[in-house]
Length: 281
Image 1 (cartoon, helix red, strand yellow):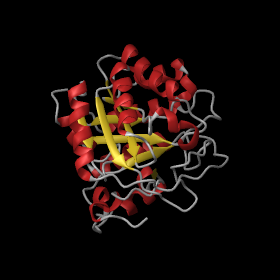
Image 2 (tube, one colour):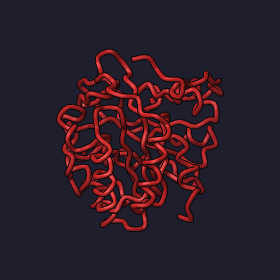
Image 3 (cartoon, one colour):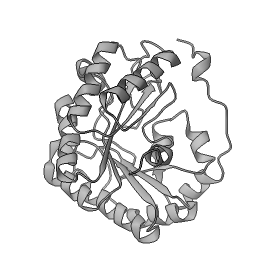
Image 4 (cartoon, one colour):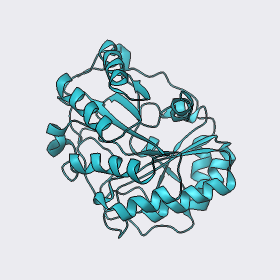
């Protein structure tokens, strides 16, 4: 399927961000997941730091991050992330990771150490984490939340019916419970989730997902178009028109979300600082 006009992205400069990240031996989800907004975000500059390596223990149908046996966590990585965030002058840092089912805590302690390292270097910066589901382990979740990020994000990615195809090693109810438990454990931390459209979902299924997220106490929501990163990934079933994204944004706000970003090129962490600043949080 050819890309429609509303999907095409203009090339942007990289602002030296890529060189800086390589100098600190860091990965970003922007690069590993082949995000279409990479040039735009790097030119600002901003980046979503991806900790715990660039090999994932899961193999989701939508994702281009490689699935392989990952290396042991690097104990120096949190400081390198903090140094890069300081050099970039970030006011809002986003930290994510590959899924690490091989680790006893799923990598939660590395998230916590990275949050603390960034806080030491940038005490006034806001910090958002985008975590895997930790197999539903509440103790691992608590480790992350005890480090006090400003926003806790866990993406549901798609509607319940499509989980077996899109996220075969994940569970819809588990992802909802991650968000629900995060809100219960740390009610002052804003919770966030995101999903992709264009994988064959219906509007009714999307609306049902919105209601499930509200039921889980989710505060912020992002909705974007799925774009096939490689030929090995799931094909796009449909390119959703911009007006449908706007209708869904209004519906989600009506249901009770504090903030909703919805559009073809919206991604979970794109303009995260602006989303956070839209509310008195």
